[in-house]
Amino acid sequence: MRKYLYPILLVCFGLAVAALFFFRKPEPIPQLKERHGDLALGGEWLNTKNAISGLLAQLRAKPDDNKAKLLLAQAYMQEARVTGDHPYYDMAAMQLLNGILRTEPENFEALCCKASLCLTQHHFSEGLAVAEQAVTLNPHNAFVYGLLCDANVELGRYDEAVKMADKMNQVRPDLRSYSRVSYLREIYGDYPGSIEAMDMAVKAGYPGLEQTAWSRITLGHLYENTGDLNNAEKQYQMALIERPYYAYALAGMGRVEKARKNYPAAIEYMRKARATVKDYAFADELTDLYRLNNEPAKATQMAKEAISMLADDAKEADANEEMGHYADRELAYAYLKTNELDKALEHAKIEYERRPDNIDVCETLAWVHYKRGEYPQAQKLIDTALRTKSRNPTLLCRAGLIASKNGQAEKGQALIRQALDTNPYLSFDLADEGKKLLAAN
Image 1: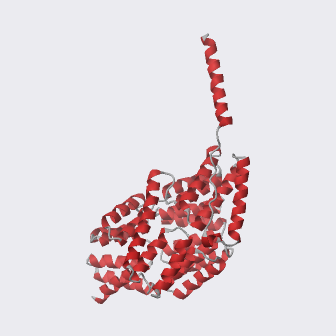
Image 2: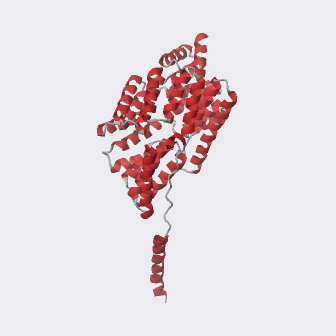
Image 3: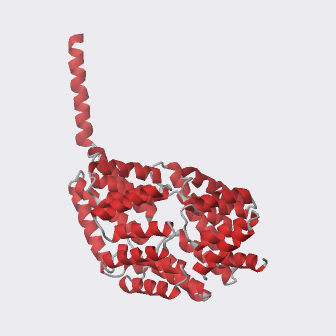
């Protein structure tokens, strides 16, 4: 009897596997959410709904259609950018991409999209690993070099990022590659070159597309950082003509009005931006504006809302190694605004442990130490933050204040003057502290 047992078991196992295959329920397909308010206006939303409805219908008819899954994942990634609803759409896109990669582990486009999502969620090491896997499959694609550039920038490997940006431009010079060149030039202290490259990016884009509008907003912000409010305003206004109700253009107009000390108008712009897109940065900027407009209760409310949004992201990231937005650097700054210095230090250190070579992260931890009166620790970190010779005025002013507290008065004053010369409209609390130090010497 035993000699028949093994074949019978094999047959039973085969039948069980077949039953699982034929009767398994397909994984639920994430659905499109309705837009509301200004984002629901215009033809773009109708086109988006029609395209995504078609893809959803294809997947209902054929749940294993990986091409349709990929297109839907890309559509959801774009919807996250437009609406700011990254928690929902990024997770939905990742679910679709992981489904593709289970059956096609070497699907180049799916790997690129997954790497991009990891970077969006601030999982930079994971994003780099996936992009490196993708580039071995197709070393002649510009987009993958852009991903490698971004990941290396965020991890503080700037020389490698430059190499990846050069390769990207050799393969395909366009909006995306010019944008990377601009950002790297800014990191290395070349504001004129950065503005030139971002202007090229805007001109290479199609008017009205979100990617073009984002490049135009970035160009406007470069003008802001160099104190050229008129050109910054022109870029934001042009973005609003080409893409009405664009939240980041509204926020840009708010910052311009803030620099001009027209706080009620700045608040109105920022409130409109916040009503359109879910982005903690708008609540953070409203915190400053309400304080400047002598509305402390509203400022406190906005500060708490910003922290709440960021804390939710952090909890999700802690619970999910692959997804969830790491927000510790942003939380560090948010806690500084509520004078919760221990929490600010806790989150700044967490971010520093992830990427100790990134100049922005070093600046954040340095500034937290400065606010805590821990000046020697701040000096070591700010020296690292200055290693690319960045001319970012906020960085320079902070570096000047830190140097002054460490007995380097001449160096500190020179850095503060350079910051104020670069941008006379520097954040007022920081600028006032710098000006008081200069006046006292």
